[in-house]
Length: 80
Picture 1 (cartoon, rainbow, N blue to C red):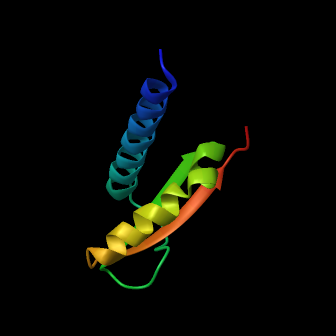
Picture 2 (cartoon, one colour; picture 1 turned 90 degrees about the horizontal axis):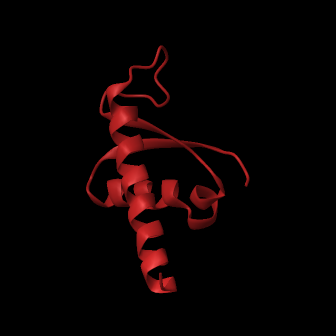
């Protein structure tokens, strides 16, 4: 397997992980709203250092803001 194939697979896995976490976070209800207002969406990213190094939560938040959505992003990252 070439390094390009491996990096593409890692990119696809990271993208699918972000989509999965975003869908799961939107489907879960929280006892306390993480941000004021009914139009806000709270998304929790749980992952490894790949999330931190590539700043996937920040990228997701920026894309949502550019689409006109109000989001509150929290990350829980386990190094390794």
